[in-house]
Image (cartoon, rainbow, N blue to C red):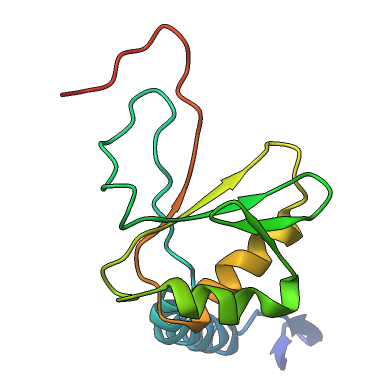
Length: 144
């Protein structure tokens, strides 16, 4: 603040200094610009199949099916598997983790944590083709 003499009286001249505010705003802008690519890379990219139109599935002999029931029972190709033994059971079934698809079949009422157990085991083994089975809506046709 400056004090200026004015006709024998002193008056206070108040002004807002904008430079520190601009500096803080620019620093925050730079921080967000630098951090955005790292945040985008850490997100999980999942391609969910559409429910109205389904794509042709690979032959059943190549595909691994994991069923998750409402009570938390996980089945691998029709046989019940304990959660702690799921990774080793998947490992024995996988021929090529990068090419062989894994399909998770879960009821809509299954708690999400049970599906995450299966996804986590698949990702640890390097499965790249991971799908979620959906029921096709009635009255819709599959594309050719």
